[in-house]
Image (cartoon, rainbow, N blue to C red; front, side):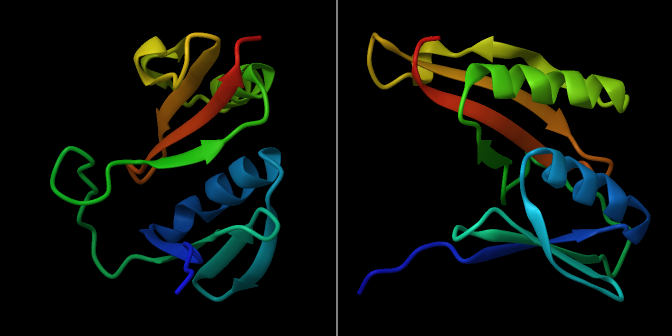
Length: 135
C-alpha cells in the first residue's frame, strides 16, 4: 500500500475565513472550493486545507494533546522573509523569535532550517519553513 496525506480540515470562526484565503493565496495556493461555511485551498497535487465553521466557541490550545502546528514548505529563505513581512503588514506577530535559523533541525552541516511561526486568528499555529542549502 502507498498512501499520503490528502487533506486536513480545520474548524474556524467563519469571520476569519478571508484571513486563511488571503494568506494561502499569498503563499501560492489556489481555492479549490468556496461554499456556504466551507473553503478548500490547495497547492497543486499535494494536500489541501479545508476550513469549515466551528460548531462551538472552544479555543485551540496547541500546547495540549493534539495537533501542534501546520508546517508549509517554502522554496527559499527569501520566501520565509517575505511571509514574515506579509504577516507584519497584516498585524500578525511572528512567534518564538522567528524568523530565524534552527541549526538543531538541519539535516546536515551545509543545510539550514529557516522558519517563521505565527498564530492565526483562531489560535492555529502555522510555520512557513525553508529547508535546504544555506543561502
